[in-house]
Length: 279
Image (cartoon, rainbow, N blue to C red; front, side):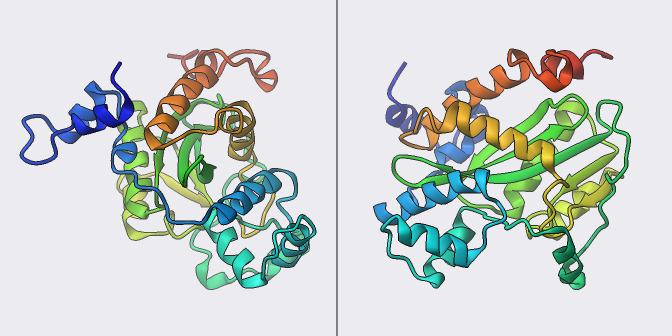
């Protein structure tokens, strides 16, 4: 196989005979990997962001002040302004204690949370989507995934160097085209998921919209568990060089996750076994 840089150069972008999508499929290059350029952060900032990413899996309830104290104890010498900016880049969303949820901004609360006390007992009843930060050797990217909550089957995923609404909508449309539509779609209240383009796709497909309460720890717990698995079982073990290498590694991992990884909560079945059980 040719080196990734050479494969990248094989893609004809000006007046191509084949679409960019088809070329990427033939060369096993993901479009978000194709257009990836390193994000301009210093090595010191990348180290801090990696630390924040790992810390979030342990203490997602930490806010700016605690994180600043933690980082300064480890010798990073950061200010509150710097910590806040880097928290935004790693998509840190502090989880609040239960009583704090009453202080959320009601004007930004677009849709109710529909999963409370809901019995999830069939495939395509509820899908959930989220975005997470992914560190690399030089720079970073974002990973989005959609999971079927009953089977834990990942119906689609993608990487990108920005958290745009258009990207999230593309991931959603691809999942619907491949697997049909869910009855309910759950996300957090991020601007990507409250955007017109994303909401309109859900409405067009007559999908019920559910959104987590701000700072709620358990509203999207299944996809949070997915992030913990993919990071500890893949991303932190193989610190990827670039976006194309990251895509290739995650492609293998999600095949493993869906088809080989035994889940205790599924009676040691795989997500694929559960998802296609009734097919």
